Length: 306
Length: 113
Image (cartoon, rainbow over all chains, first blue to last red; front, top):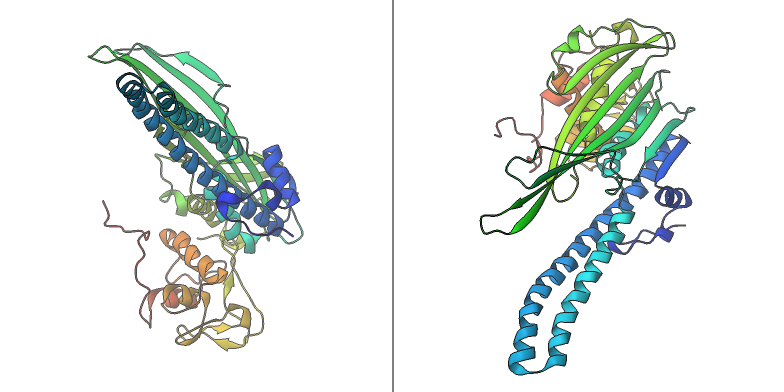
């Protein structure tokens, strides 16, 4: 039996075999019943929290090392040439460098075990809230990608017109987070597709004092697609919900698949951050509201809001 | 009489288990599983979520969220249609008989700029 662990001290052996496999393979696939999936997501949630704690700790060590290097550099000269103690001076310079290297290594290690925040922010609360609507005998078909993006493998890279800058480079990374097919009690199926596109913009410029500098900005475009596949052909009645569709960020459409008309609602988000990819994700409440609106568009006889 | 608590979020339906009592705030019949103990005796998860002094359970949390999801789409008052809030739900949500819980820091504030 797995024992609960303090987030920062958690090890992979504290996880159940299913969660361990998910963390190692950075993926979850196959058919899951609601309870098992909820349990798995809750474990992965704890794992992600641990990774966040480690990332924050590594950042602190990195910053300590960086500040120590600057201070150590001055102390090195003071001690080496004024006090004339070269060994002490070398130690003063070497210790912060060692701390800095440790910080960098810890940051890399923490990043390697980190899971996408969508798991914690979007998926787990959503599955939890839908638990009473799940079909007891059917399984949720899950394709979940936990790998995150690899900054070295951009899907597209281009040099933008630099303008006042020395150079302006943009890398694009695409990430398919998940496809969930959730069977509901009435025989219909709720489908959720989450995908992200990241843009990394690196601006290099020379300051008025002649220093060469570079700044990185990240933009994350999240696309959430919620679909409701009814068990039989129904005629959707979207009139009552049209006023509740935000036309700036949402798009409602109906597509025919396998002889039934499927209602589809897309929603887009834009998140920004400097230096690191944005940690924000589409909130579970928004995704649930999308499904609520889709179910409300069913004809009244099928349980819709008319 | 059967339990009148509505299960689910997308597909709401009555619990229909044999009732063991009733909500001390809105009066709906409740089974043991959906009774939340508190200062006014037993309450349904909806009333327990919106009033102070009741235990926080999975049902109260889900009831609170469900209210938030449906309210913008006009499903709060006077609906009573299949799959949506019953008259009991509307009464519980709109006519509080005990003090409402104090606002939390992360509550939605329409006047916030």
